[in-house]
Image 1 (cartoon, rainbow over the protein chains, first blue to last red):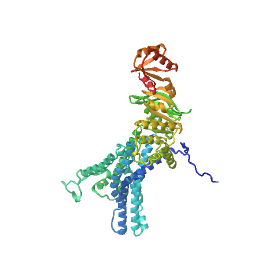
Image 2: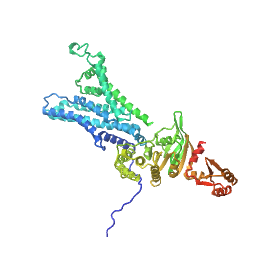
Image 3: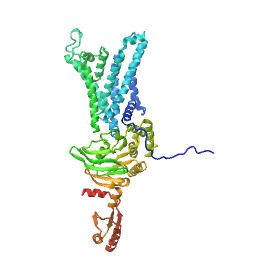
Image 4: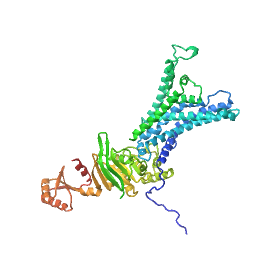
Length: 307
Length: 300
C-alpha cells in the first residue's frame, strides 16, 4: 500500500526563533550592500557599466606597462610603481566622484535612512560600513593594478629573484601609498555626498573641486613670462617662493604628492616639483588634515541626521 | 498581560514648542491606537519609542529598556514610517532580505523570512520587480512587510493608511488586523482617522496637544458615546420638549437632533415623543463613527 508522500499546508505566519546576530550582522549587511552597490551587482546591466569602465581604466595602464616591459625585456625605461598611482589617480578620482554618492545619496533621498536608524546599528556604524565598502573596492583596484605591474616587472627581469631582492622595498611602498590613495578618493566624494541627496550634484561638485583647484594652482604656480626664465634656465613663478605652497592647492594631487614622498621619486610636472621642495611633513600633514577633516565632516554631518 | 511600551512622565520639547508634556501611558499586547489630530504628538511619541529622538525628560521604555540608549532592543521593534522609505531600484525581495539582515537575521534565514512575509502581505507575484514600479498600495504593503521582516515583538505604524484610496485603506487595515490577531505581533498604530482606529484596535490612547486626554478599550469608547441622530421636517421644538418631559436630553446639532443613549428604554421614549408631537420623521440613525465626539469634547 502506498502512503501519501506529500501534502501542502498553509502554515500561516511563522515566528522566527533562529539566531539574532544584532549589531555585527547589521554592520556586515550595510557593508556588503555598499560593496555590491559600488560594483553594480544585483542591479541591471546599466549599473555595471561605470564600475567596469573604472576597473578597465585602472587595470589598463598596469597591463600595458607590464606587457611593454616584458616585450622589451626591461630595455626601455618605463613608468614604474611610483608613477602608476599618478597615472590612475585622476581617473579613479573622477569615477569615485560619480560612483561614491550612490552609497549615501539614495538612502537619504528615498528615506531608507529612517529604516536604518531604527535598527540595531548606530549611525556611526552605518557611515563607517558605507565608507569601508567603497574603500574596499578602491583599494582592491589600486592593489590589483600594482600587482599586475609588479608581476610584469618581475617576470621581465633577467633574474626575477634578484629583481625582487633589489626592489623589495617597492612592496611596502605600494601598500602604503595605495592605502592612502584609496582612503582619499573614498573620503572626499562621500563627505560631499553627505550634503546633498542628489547624486549628480555631488559628482559635479567633486569634479568641480578638482578642476577649479587644479586651475587655481596652475595659475598661481605658472612661469612668469615677463621675467622669462631665471638664471640657469629655472622657471620663475608668478607668485615667487609662495608658489611652492600654492602648488598644494591642487586637490587631485594631495594623495600623489604623498605618493612621491613614499616612493622617494622624482616628481613629474612643475607643481609636484614645487611641493617636493617643501619639507616632507608639509604635504603629508596637508593630506592628513584634508582627509581627516573630510572624514570628520562626514561623520558629524550624519550624527546630526540621526538627531 | 505584559507591558510592552511604557511612557513615564515622557516629555519632548523642540526648542519652545512642546510636543509631549509629562505623558504617562502603557501599551499592552494587542493592537493599540494612538489617536489624535495632526500635531498632537503621535509621531513624536512613536519616534521616542524607536529611539530616534531623545526625551527632554522622563522615559520611553520598550520591554523595560530605553531604545535611545540600547541598540539591542531595536531588534525587537518594527517601524513603518508615514513618509516614503523605499529604494526604487531594488526588488521587494532583495530589500526585505537586506533589511532583515540589518535587524540581525543571518542571510539564509533573512531570505526565507523575506519570501514568507511578502507572501503574507500579498506581494508574492511581484516580489522580483523593482519597487519603483509598484503602485501606492503595493509600496505601502512593502513598508509594512519591512517592519515585520525580523519578526519583531511590537511594530509601530505611523499613519499606515495615509495616501491610500478607500479600497487600499480597507486592505491595509485588514492586513494590520491579521498581523495583530493571527501573527501575534503587537501593534501601535497612529492615526488621525477614527474609522481606522475603531475598526482595527483593541485599545485607544487619545493624544491632544501633547497630553493624553483619553485612554481605554475601543468598546468602552463606542458604548459610552452611542448617539441617535434624529432628523425631523416639522415640530422640532415640540419634540425636544416632549423628549425632555420623558427625561431624555436632545441636543441640536445643525439641522439634526442628537440623543446620547444611556439605556435601551430611551428608544421607546423617542418613539412615544414622535407620535405625541406628530413630528414628521425624515431620518433616525445610530451614529457610526462615534470617536469624533472625543475630539469635539476635547476642542470645546
